[in-house]
Length: 408
Image (cartoon, rainbow, N blue to C red; front, side):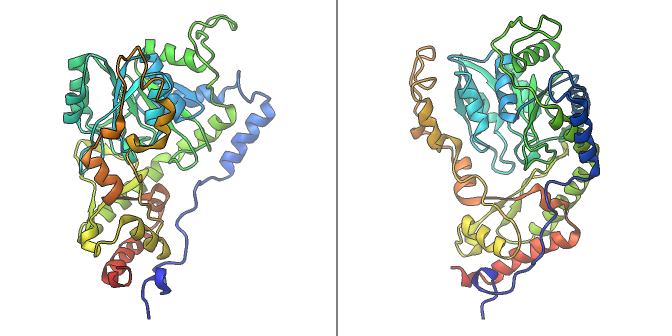
């Protein structure tokens, strides 16, 4: 008789993890308030209130609430003056928006490798990649774990570069007690449906720089000035404004966020202790400078050799059969994605840049191992479960390891 659920055995668990998104009557009442106000967009109070509260929550002076995290990154790049012929250094282990935001302002993504034990951008590789065309660095706080902002800030200051933090997975995360997003010049956050704070879609830009704030505000609002005439358009902006309905939901979501963040961090620490005892599983390195982590993803390094050579996608299938929603994570580096061919003429062969970019020759070994071999993760809602729920994760890994002959 097989023991593994994927082979017909009994699964470790047959009950779901906490349903996401979580909401209650407070979201409903907030939506009704906006509905009956008649101010669903421009002129309402919820968007400015959310911008203020979220910026303060992230230890920033200013916030600009926008349509999504991709728009937040693109507007931040424009506000920093990034454009034709400029280079922006980014990691390739992230969602495609980090790269497309750069490409869509006609700049060139320069991919550098990640650290093997955090999956965040490697500062040493960043400095090696700087040229006279480099304009900005976008560190991605992957899974909510802050990148090394000490090293990156030193590098940016040394070469006169802007840091735009991709904090789309890092609400409330802290580096040395300072919340991410406004450690650099600007930071971008997302509120898409899978995110730890969500309104289905939406995003926000935060900053401590008043000039950059005014530029970002103008760019998200059709190029207008904060106190200018309605039909005067000073910058080539667009309509990237968040709606009042989204802002109303997010205000409620934010009010309960600390409670959930605390639970995620406690369960992540519990899993670190348990899973690190299983040969072939290594949680991400803990850094005392990371004083809070949102854990949008609980990322692990998986060694197939310790599991009989089982590829990570097959491990994920077996875990899901046991009732554990393990993901094999990103399946390829961003520089191997087919969408890059869309940008072949511009900006990748742009005369302003002066040379043709060919990512086909690029090989970043740490990123490729993370994508092809070892990077697996659990989604954030799993970490909202009980200790028994965490024990089921451990039990499923142990069960698969003990019965690996059924899969190899």
